[in-house]
Length: 474
Length: 104
Image 1: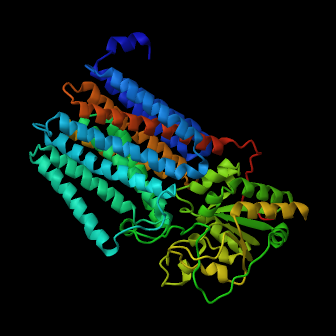
Image 2 (image 1 turned 60 degrees about the horizontal axis):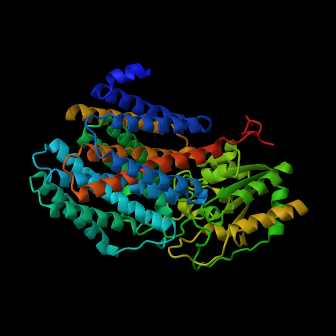
Image 3 (image 1 turned 120 degrees about the vertical axis):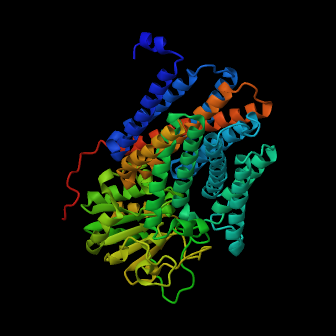
C-alpha cells in the first residue's frame, strides 16, 4: 500500500478494519502453510507478519493514550520472550508452550479484571459486552493457573503423578465452577461490588489448579491441547467484548485447532476427554523410561549392548520406537548416529511414532527433526503397524504404554482399547529402560515378559551410544 | 454489531477446523506452538483498553501493563520457538528419497 493512500485513510476506522482483515487472512494463510514441512517455516513467518500488521492497526485507533506504559510493556515482554524462546532446549518445548499458553490466558483474565474495575463493575454495559468479558475472565484464569501447573509438572518442579483429593475432587471442582458461574451471574445481573470479580477470579484460579494437579504426566498432551483451546476461546470472547475482529478470528482459529488436537490425542489414548479431566490415571511415567512393571510372575531377559548390536547389524529392517524416555535422556542425536551406522550396513531404519508419545502432540517428531532424521523415515501408527510383522528388530527407547500389548488383549487393563504400536509382532524386541523399578502408577507392560523381548538396562543415551560403538567395532 | 461478530466467530471456527485438520501429526508440536503465538493477539485487547482508558486507576494500569507484557511474551516467544522448531524440519539437504515403501 502506498504511503500516500495510507495517510489519507489514517485514523479512520475503515483503514483499521482493512488492516485487521489483512492480518487474519495472513494468519489463516500462514497456518495453511503448516500442512507440509517445506512450507511451514514460511507459514509461521507469514502469521508473524499478520500479527505485526494487527498490532500496527491497533496503534492507529483514534484517541489512544498511555503510550509510555504501552511501549514499556511491549519492550519488557519482548525482552523476556526472546531469550526464553531462543535458549529453550527442544526437549523442554512442551513446558515452554505451556508457559506461553499460560501467560496468554493470564493476559485475557487481567484485561477482563481491569475492564470490570474501569467501568465500575460493568455499570451500564450491555450484556453483549458483559457476558463475553465474564467468560474470558473465567476461562482465561483457568487457563493461566492450569498451564502453570502443567509447566511445573513438565519441568518437574511438581511431581508428575496425580495429586488430588481423590473422591472429593470432582464435587470440589464442581463447587468451584458453580461459585465462578454464580459470581458471573451476579455481575451480569447488575452487582458492581469488586468482591464479585475477585471471587470469580479466585474460584477460576483454584479450578485451574485443581483440574490439572490430578492429571498424570502421560496425559499431558491432552491437557496442553485443551488449555491451548481454552486460551484461544477466551481471546475470541475478549474480541467479542471489544468488538475487535482480529481477536475474534485469531482466537477462534486457535480454539478450533486446540479442540481438534485435544480430540485426536484423546482418541489416540482411547479415552474420553471428560475422563482425562477427571484425572487420577496416567501416572508420572506412563511412557517414561524410568517407570514400568511392578510384580509380575514372568521373567525378564536382560541383554548386552554387544548382543543388541549384533542383532541389529544382521537385520533387514529395524524400527525404532521412541517415547518420553528418549526425550528425558536427550538421546535423539545418539539415536540418529545409531541409525546412520545401521544404514551403512544396508539395514532399513524406520521410526514408529505413536500420536501420544512424549508430552505434547508431535513431540517425538520435533526431537528427531532436531537430530536431522529424514522426515520420510518417521512413520505414523497406522502406517507402521502392518510393518512390524516383517521387522527383525524393534528398538523401544523409553516408550512404555504405547507398546503394551495388554491394550489389545487384556480387558482388565486400564489402557485396554488404546491403539498401540504392535511391536510384539516383530521377530525381536529390544527395550532400552533405566530399570524395572515399579513407578508411581506403573501399569505393567506385558511386552517385557514376552519371549522375543530382551531388555537393555541403563540410561537411554549411553545405551544407544554403546550399541553404536559395538556396531562400529563389529 | 454483536450478531455480525458472532457470525464472524462461527465462520472462523469452521475455517480454523478446515485448515488445521490438514496438518500432519509430524507438525503437531509446531502447530500448537504457532497457534499458541497467535492467541497472544490478546495483547491488542490490553493495548486498546489501556490506550483508550480515560480514568484508569493505578491498579488497572498495572493490571493492563502486566497483561500487555504477558501477551507480548506469548506472541514473541511463541513465534520464535515455532520458527526454531520448523527450521529443524527444513534443514535436510539429504537426497530426496521418493520411495519409502520399498522392501529389500
